[in-house]
Length: 336
Image (cartoon, rainbow, N blue to C red; front, side, top):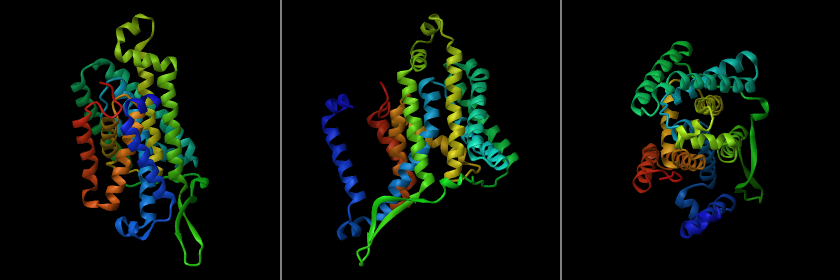
């Protein structure tokens, strides 16, 4: 952090001022001129929270994608199918067992195992052949989409989370002050706040795993010099299979989390694959911190676009991607 401030002093000052302004807009009572300029405070804050919680969901999906694509250089365009398959499997398990947490666990394990099999059977035979990987995983995703459509049809499924995740939490943010002087505070769904908490927790665990553990160092070393790591006695293929399994498992995990927050339906695989690609491109390949930043930017852009200029809301995310590629092709936190 200190190194970033020293190298980018002007940018750090801008970020600090923006953070102060944002905090004021969240916690202060808005004057009339601000309300007339951008609308009600409640709309702004709810849109902000929706963007941050959507960023949490995008991070859960894209963090697995960056492990596979960014670190291992494996182009897995079936990642979105793993998200959707995890959602369907989690739904079936939770509905038949009555346990949402069991559905979450089974979805992670099953998709993680399928990821290990995919890496062992497919990607191991096509190392450093990105075009073949792309074409094969596109084929796998099409087959998986047809199979899921045949089994679960085109019905939209909605999870039932535990009772303690229902309802709304009162936030320390003033919504309005009535003429009687009574202060009304904003409320926000507990489950969406839980999604954000889980995303932050997963991000911290992944960062520690990749940067502070021996296995994480092996992974990074294997990407840069696989032959040298193999010569030192490390089973590189086993390490890579485990990493691929973790990345795939996170997609299945996110499928249950996302299916509970929103829904599970055909087409969600393509949506989240595209979102993961944009997040990783904006944030930077192979960087967990970059994925977090990219997810936050894209999540906020989507929600504010839908709230304030819905006609062009979808275009905004692609404009951000184009600008980042033009200015910094390796992504915000990517290495040259």
